[in-house]
Length: 116
Length: 116
DNA sequence: GGCAAAAGAAACGCTTGCGTAACGATCGCC
DNA sequence: GGCGATCGTTACGCAAGCGTTTCTTTTGCC
Image (cartoon, rainbow over all chains, first blue to last red; front, side, top):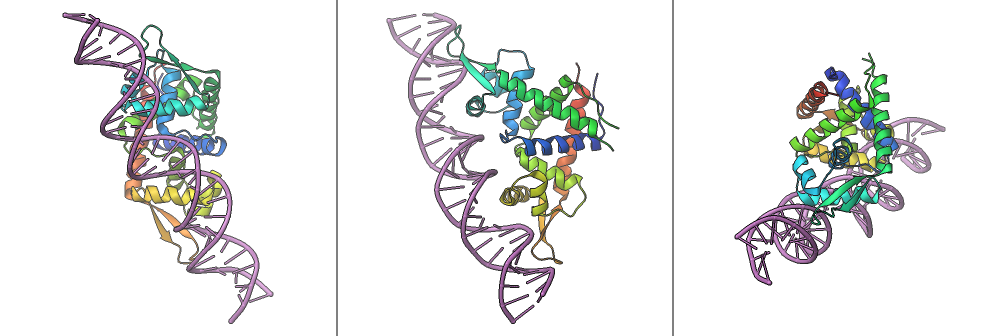
């Protein structure tokens, strides 16, 4: 079931959601951090640094840094993979799930408000 | 005409758009910069630093810096208001309009691809 | 057991953004 | 004409992100 949007609706939705998010959230995640967070929570695990780097098309340190930051915010967690101790498996957290749930509600609510 | 989205659709849309934007765009605007850009292009002018700061709920230097950056990228332009020379009027640019047009297309296309 | 390959992190120098505070230019108004 | 208020910018010290390179740990394989 695709979502059909007009150009006005598409940008209008992004506009209102972005605006509201800036107003409400002190954390101000970057676009990359948001992409990583959504990837972790919407795509079935396991997630590794290397895998995320490949998916996003960025270098590994970018992922490491983003995980540092979002880990400090409690949005994700890192656990060493015991079966291959070179790997780190990125874990979801309750707080991260709540964060995205709230964000999803924001999108839905702003979508409903779209007039044009 | 509101846009009705399920939670999966809302976050899924954000996920795919964000991901694609990270992969494609080297500019990597922050959330605040994006909010400012959309505000400038979607809301009727005139736009001032003070007005944008109030709308976003941030301080004026935040707007000044964002305009510096986006100005250097050619996405916006600044012109002194001749009727009240304290004011600066923020102007749209062709490049900025193109940027958002492309971004809108991205949203629409990713919306169409949504499956669940 | 030895060694190249792989994964993630850390180090480096740099750029950009932040919040607060101070500043210069311009206005309105008495 | 003077003067407080307003607008946008700049300065400051700091935190966070960047790309590249290097390092450490661990693996797989001969």
